[in-house]
Length: 189
Image 1: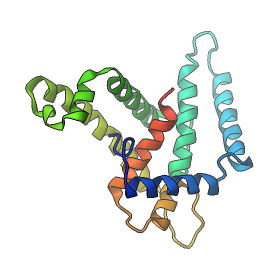
Image 2 (image 1 turned 135 degrees about the vertical axis):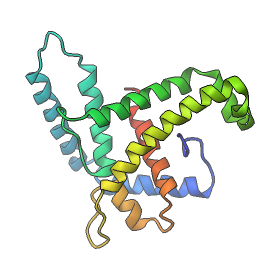
Image 3 (image 1 turned 90 degrees about the vertical axis):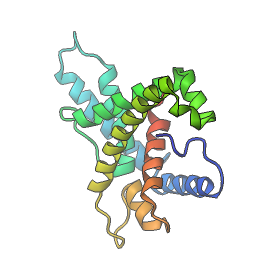
């Protein structure tokens, strides 16, 4: 799942520079990004105002809000608050996977000693983590497949710019980078 997180070497340095350049080009820290966040905040507050305020769980709309900001940067779209089941299933799977990574000594052992994932008890646990990870990559693959890419047009999201500017265009690298961007943005939510 977290393919690039602890990476080093030329690929990692190149991808890091690429992401920073895209963030700069797309207006991260400038008025454009601020405006996108304001629109997302408005969408969230409009959704919350329609709810029964005595029983609303405010955490859920905030999760949708944060995931939508990341989704828009990566894939060029946001999910409506009323129709975000697939996004929230992804976020829930993601949160559970992060919690397992953070709390499990088994994960640390397998990352340091990869052969241990074949041991009887560890293999069952590792398979569950891997299955959830693959389910999450299915969501990312679907979102990537929905992005329209025309090399003659200006890029409006990370995936378009990746295909336009990245000479290797390795799909596994794109999926890993999208996953890492969600990791960076959702780790605290």
